[in-house]
Image (cartoon, rainbow, N blue to C red; front, top):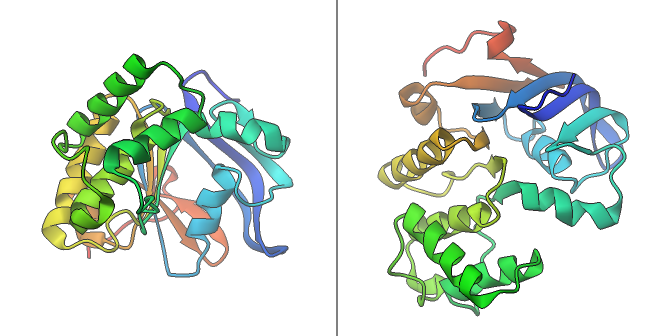
Length: 234
């Protein structure tokens, strides 16, 4: 049952990579405002699961709904509509290096249908304030530290007020102090009602900020909330 507060619903799903099943018979739901970690060894399928949720990998076996879109039935033309409902955060930033911070954010808004200059300016200002970088709109990406670049990536993901953030190792390239800053931003966003699914290898962050955990292991996705495994502090 996909309730009004359910943002992600996965039922009897097989996740494929290059036509090979890498995750089999997975079942879980994420509700509005939930914070959930996704853990597992490198190559276990975490990134493939996230890519399937935002319709970047083909999905045919089972049922997945994200923000009321049926991923197994979604047409190519509807994928941009799905991605307006979710925020995607990459480890490697993927900023446009030839454009300022403001123009990076402007590019996303224009690509997702925003056209009124005054509303665009207000929205960009709002998200930069939220990540603590209101004074850096005119800077180029190469002028920013790694932590600042990742904050811009978070700001970019927030532009369309997503129902959920899907974050793939967002602190993987950052030092511990900066990683904690990014985590605090995530939890502030989460408190405002946005769900978060965050893939991570950083067990120190999980220990410090405990929450529900999905664990990818031997082709399965185990859920701490269902008692399918017990997480031991590292």
